[in-house]
Amino acid sequence: MKDIRLTALDPVGPRRTIVPVGPVRIGEQFALIAGPCSVESEDALLATARAVKAAGANILRGGVFKPRTSPYAFQGLGFRGLRILADVGREVGLPVVTEVLDPRDAAWVAESADMLQVGARNMQNFALLREVGRVGKPVLLKRGMHATLAEWLNCAEYILAEGNANVVLCERGVRSLETYTRNTLDLSIVPAARETTHLPVVVDPSHGTGRVSLIEPMSLAAVAAGADGLMIEVHWKPEEALSDREQAMPTDAFAEAARRILAFRRFMDTLCAR
Ligand code: PEP
Ligand code: MN
Image (cartoon, rainbow, N blue to C red; front, side):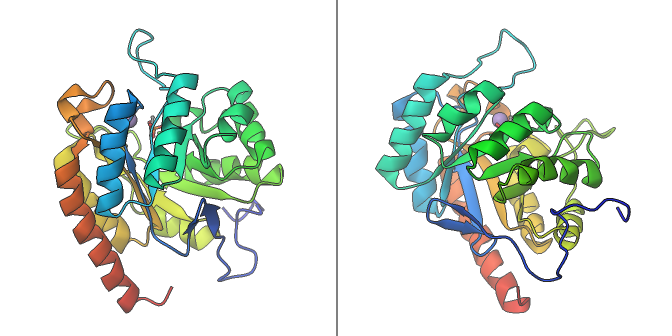
């Protein structure tokens, strides 16, 4: 790490970047990002969005372009999904984040989304990084499933180099020899990224574990590790979810978990001056 000089690395010590997403100031306020893996219909999204907002979420997620392992799996609703996401976000009063897969989509998606997500599979898609940098909306940059910290930060730097300072890093698990969990959530990267950069770091325990039962414990652990937020997949009827059904948290379980996670974060705030 010593030989790379990034503006993503903190040159001046304790200064931290605050990334505004709608009214939420990530880095200053805890970001609880929640919603379904994919936008499926207006009714389904509205039901989930109302529930996560009532539980304390402050940003709504929902994929409209889904990077699926199989080309025959549900690929997302595209433009129609984005309209639904933006309408529902407005109706419930939550800013929205959605993934962009193709650099050609970045500009028009940015007209309706408050934050653009670059997914793990695209972390090193340099054309996409440059484009989301140019478009200027806040970016949620997921860590690639095989990426080192230095590789991840260099990808953040691609966005910063285009003049877009609003980058939030998101740890979502890396590949390991373990098969019980979908990925291995690397929580050591949270303090590591926070001590080497001024960017906020959030954690996605849904893709990080692939198991609903592990989401709350790993969320609490992420808060203990200093995460600036969490991204959790929630569905009002998990058994009907069109993608990532097995890791979709039911809305009532999310409400319970969110109560404890937010209380634990408040407790951590009293212990540590941030
Ligand atoms: C997602 O958050 O919808 C997603 C596809 O995640 P990842 O890129 O981390 O696999
Ligand atoms: Mn998913």
